[in-house]
Amino acid sequence: MPVTPLFCAENARLDYARQLASRFALPLLNRRPVEGYWLELGPQRLELVTTGKHGAVYAEFVEGAARHRREQGGGRGQPVAKAVGLKGAKALPDIVDATAGLGRDSFVLASLGCRVTMVERSPVAAALLCDALERAARHADTADIAARMQLVHANSADWLSQLVATARPEVVFVDPMFPDTDKKSAAAKKDMQAFQHVIGDDMDSARLLEAAIAAAKVRVVVKRPRLGAAIEGVKPSAVLDGKSTRFDLYIIKALRPDDSL
Ligand SMILES: C[S@@+](CC[C@H](N)C(=O)[O-])C[C@H]1O[C@@H](n2cnc3c(N)ncnc32)[C@H](O)[C@@H]1O
Image (tube, rainbow, N blue to C red; front, side, top):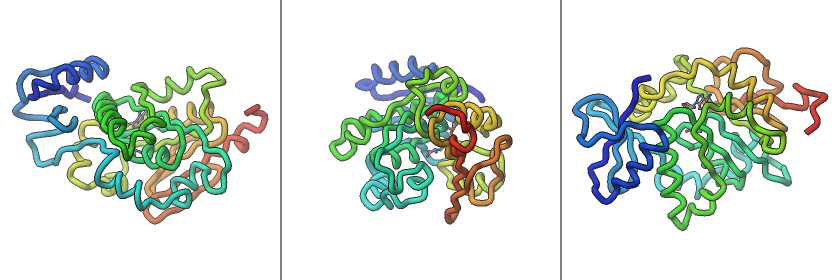
């Protein structure tokens, strides 16, 4: 993937722009590009922008859809909550979201009370997440949820494999960008096209699934379009069907019967 640079026209925010550029190894420009895609730090937030037809993309935990989900969301009965095993559970699991993206699934799970480690390998997505998390931490409605979320900029397959036994999460959540048509049409909204263009497809999900199964103490959950293919390799132990989304569950006790949790 070509490197995506960062530009900031706000003098008051240049220090923050430098911190983002340094943490996520983004080239910092002193002039706005005339073509292509770039990250722009404005007065309010960090956005992925382009001169082309796509709208700006940013991660958001305070307003818009995140606010709606926080206020009207389906609680522990919603499909993603059932998939990670929250329905009827007494204790809330620690979750690693191994494909954090724009953090929407992580935010739902953290809103339900889970501690969520968001792991993201793309510097662009990780920078957008970092900025959204920082804004959420400063807002009274979301500060407690943000406090349950942390961001790691790494390849999850590598990061999960180096975890010591005491740091292994109960649940690993995986939602890769598949190079299949149903995912593309599901993400057909113009703004998401920009994200897909910059991030690209995830062609190594089988390796990630293996690392997730080796690291998770209780289960691995793979989110897929309802009719999408499962990740190659280990077969799911159970499947939860939703309206447009399916969750493939890999129950660790069934897969590693001798594992001492
Ligand atoms: C479809 S998006 C995830 C969307 C996310 N579930 C959300 O709610 O916004 C997939 C993301 O996973 C990231 N990803 C894929 N494989 C990864 C890996 N092995 N390690 C870290 N991030 C990965 C991609 O960079 C991309 O940002």
